[in-house]
Image (tube, rainbow over the protein chains, first blue to last red):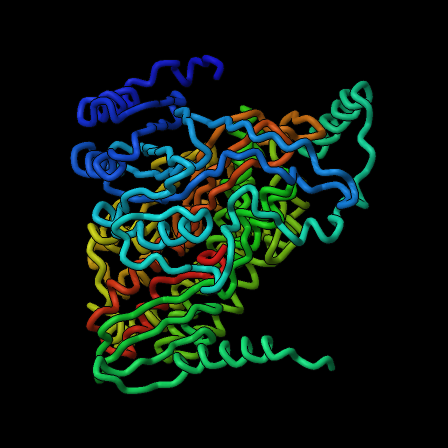
Length: 225
Length: 391
């Protein structure tokens, strides 16, 4: 991120959140990332997931629950599926590259809590090992987490220990598979060519591009004036 | 017609039986089960609510959704960034333009570009117009659930004035698809500003009318005051947002507190709160918010800056690697997008945090012990849109 005068590179308020969480949780904080002036990500160990939620709620004052979800970091074996289905699928890579806050595993659970008094939110992340996709439920921390955990359970196949009612929320009861996993194919795209592909205009070459853009910009100005 | 196999017949019979089990009202030791929906008018779409009753009182209640689940979080993964706005328009279909804005802002945040001031102001104006059209329908709808038919007709009539303005500017009554990464598709048409101001006057008259017709009505007050009280702590723990949260006395509005680049801070308006947390408070807060929105629109129209409506963006939009979260105060409450980009043409993962999903999670809590007719007023006052729950 570039340094600008409006967003100082050091965000003291958000650094203080990380420091406080590190004091409370010790080694359980395994990664963090600050986007100065915008956001903060904190990655904790799986054992400390519920404790981290409680610390954020009770000691840091982050009492407003926003959402809980998960990310499957496996690169999609199907790509954007934009081309004709007869084309070969893109080269499937299995390298896992995770985002802000780092990570070592394919699945990460992510949640966001917010403090209304400090007007800031924290993203909390946690890694889940492939051979044991389970984590403690946040139900004792925020009541609203109930349906979010059910959704993550059906969409990603992640189990929340301590959740009493992990029934499918959206999908029919007998549905097989976990749709939001990257290796779950979007069949509509695989069996039928994407209709949008036919009216894609050829893009101008890079030289013309700049000219066209300049012409467009003047047009807009005229319209605005 | 092809004959069904035995297996298909069995599956069909089982599905029928499963429906029948809940569609029947029957008495057990635990009380009676009453199935409300999926086609009940108070559910704004197809939400099913299974109530366990003891006489007239609700023992427990389970909302069942998924009848309209369209899997947007999966679908956006096979679309490019500009294509996503078409999909997200359909999340909250009564305030469509407001759905586009946070996604576009998240993409802009990742690309580190900013729309020019004129575009930001027009965005804010259209955002508030969607709020007015969305919430004025709520006002009529809430009255309808309590038994006042005429308010609904007035609401539909006056909402149309706002929709006309949205259509005049964007070309779409319900699904404008007008927001672009870096700005807007078009500038405002000629004469639009004066027409919109006239519309705002009509909407203020509509608010006056509703205050005398609905809010001051004795039956309306008896049916809503003290019904479905949600304390602030519960509202926060369930992640409720928008007018539902403000009606519980929490002074929180993302438009004022985290304005994410739009023009709300440029004008003078108030955040409306009500301390009671009951159905009446939720109605009252929303009605006042329409007034505040008309004030915002008026002021923004007066001060609309000149200039371009589009920043310089490449023809082919590629969003650099990163993660961004942007939330705005939509008509139904806080709507946020968590966008993960891997540097490609389309998003790698998008988590859509919708307001109604969190808002109605409180239903099992708030309906415990209430009487059946009050369930309808509570559902109506929480104000959810099915597309906003099921995504």
